[in-house]
Length: 434
Image: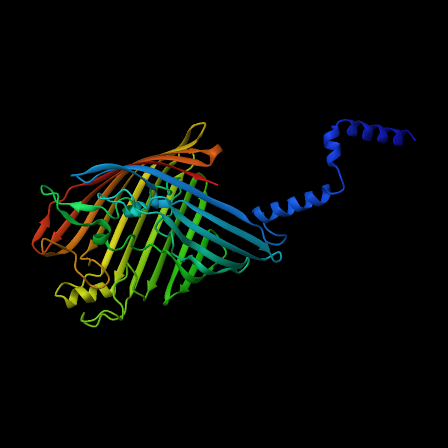
């Protein structure tokens, strides 16, 4: 009896807190209106997934301001940092049983201003979206996984292994900063050639993404093997290793890939005529990188190497009277220190050097020559040195960075060497992840 009296008293007390106006709203249609509103919200709200497959939304925003100086002009532009551009992604996973699982990933790249398209004539490189990944995976903890779709090649990222927190603005793909800028001749300011046209291959030895199927093995004693095949008979393999022994962290990888289709970086295909039988494209890439860090001090060293052999380019050069140069290579080294000097998070300070030997390249994969003053450019090589600073802000999942890069180009034509101006840039920006 006492319990009944107590419950009744609580109900009366709760009712007394409701104003007469609110009480009047509690009519017979209240539940129907509420259910309708809930249904509307369900239709317009991103779910965490259904009962079987999870859904996670992730991504980053990476925007920067960069000043540049080509020896004759200088300016300051704002752009999306193309070293690790802004993106949004959706991924999910479902457990099939204790050993097997299925998952998916959709990732879209976003450029507010395309850094690779700005140059001395325009600060508007255009904006837009590009599909980075659209893939599904079925895998096993015991046997590894198979992925199918627009996905990473086995050796994608193989020259960019890095233990320090600088990959979002400083990796071996150093032409992200000056793709579309021109190299200037000393004294005259004449345009010798565009950096990416002369380099031809953006990063030798490095994989990319494509329409393919990829296998990834389970990790065994720190080792992992990957292999892919797809599109017009592209294929590749890679071996990665990561381990921590005492105070030393170490990560490394080596990969090889082939493609037999023409693209913007692989020369020749069946459409090319009059070039001594260079009918089919064939490019081979070999890339490797390694990074080591001493955990207590934060001291680190990272190195990378990549080379591409382009059979089509060699055939075209030979057919036009030149030595059949088919190699395009680079090597890259960075060293620095990463320590938590501030409560905000770890600070990384580093320096680096990159050497690129593109050899005798051609302007495009139709066999047209790079020329200056009416003479073929027979050799292109450049050096780049850099210094940088990154401050991680842990509570905001944010990184603020400052990066200086200095480029010197060596250009040789059939008439001799050309004296060129240095190209340099200072980039300041930030990345925030979600």
